[in-house]
Length: 106
Image (cartoon, rainbow, N blue to C red):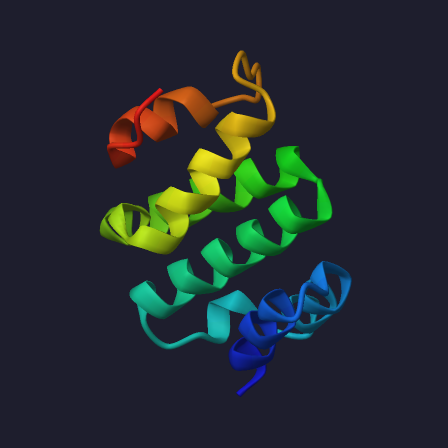
């Protein structure tokens, strides 16, 4: 239920509340790797919405490490695209290589 609140807050455009909901969850207690990776991609989306791009990239990299196939999904790929559009020449550690691995056009 708590992970659902993260997504609802994002849809409502409230990144701060989304991050607060995420902080109330212990990711290690999420039972499956896919759902744990989804938790991190949700955090990445919230941080992107909030303008905290470095934190968004770190969350995406964690999600990829947990379940690489989850980064191939539409949502995370859109977050990566949004991050790249914010700074075409991004120096954010790992973003461009993550984009390549996920199939996002640079």
